[in-house]
Length: 285
Image (cartoon, rainbow, N blue to C red; front, side, top):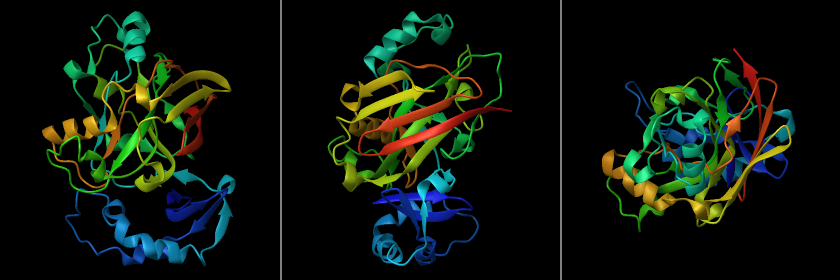
């Protein structure tokens, strides 16, 4: 199942080049009142909603995907957990490129640990990445985004994939500089999720997925998730050993080699096998 959020917060079922409006199915979500839960209500109830979504898809209005504005498929993640230098060749390029490391030691992920990105940085691929500091280098980083489907607290690696609701493409944008990662990666628009949410049953094992990124047609990044230093189950287990993961939380699994700068006017195309392709424009504040 492929689900998207689009236009004025409509909810859609993606079939081929079309999106079917299944917003009516959301009426089956449990009612909530303040204080609201720190979870994404839709992702938390995705399994129980499946039949309602499929039924709504039989009669919902259709539009071409090319004619809608795709928003982030995950509307209310409690947190975004990110994995730095989780491809060996990216670690090597980060250590070799002064524009990336800024005279700071770049350590292995096992020593550096994970970091958090502000949820306020999230957009969908129908929105623009906005460069706020054009005097600094602003880099693209394609990553497989893992969406947690149920509460995960100190789960084992062997059981970790049972806690995954699905996947999408993630762009972990970053300003290069001497500051701490979370600051440089949490600017507004610097976490792009899309083009849609793909349920875990469509992906199966997240190892072995090809990733590719181009900027204005120029190849920049090309790799496979089999090359992750810490694979998806290990990342989930490790993250959940430090803090509880909740439905809708997103884990960005790390970017491969080939990161590079983007400028206003560029278009980033990001593709992950079994997930899809998204084009994201770069603008300026």
